[in-house]
Length: 217
Image 1 (cartoon, rainbow, N blue to C red):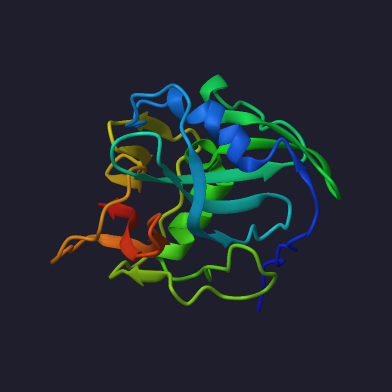
Image 2 (cartoon, one colour):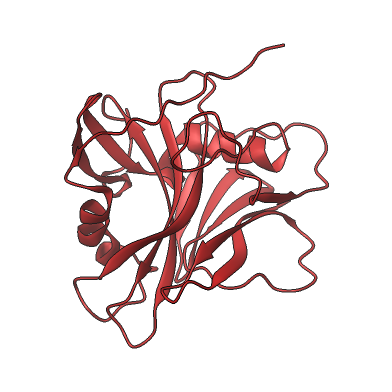
């Protein structure tokens, strides 16, 4: 049986930090809800998936912006690469950072990265195991997959990515759309599509659970 290579989490410096990159990038997104050009971000949760080839870091980050009247929780899936992603659209690049162990890393919006999209589909097919955000080889049991999918669905060679006011749609096939939630809210009752839920924390420490991604066929 083929097993994916597990990502190793390094305790090291990252310059600029992930939050510093996102502070500059988030206000440029159509789904940014803030009125301030400079969000005040804090880490609020998330999980990882492993790249089967062991080359690309895949992280599903949650950050909370407290710059406005009410906190807003954003879901920002990102990928970390050791070289530029060939053919990536200009808006896909979040920025570059210097990793204390791995060197220069190119950070991309995961909705535009075929490796992340492919592994998110694998998760929805229950063929990938969500991993803890900050620990090596440790499954994240708080991530739940609600799926009745059969068969195999892989992303198209050139998926169309469209940002909306609170989510990003990825046309993975002519009749299938993978939606990545950007502005997180508590999960609704009676949600019948294949979807992934996970948790995050509000600034006062309250745990919330919401839909991070869903698949419409």
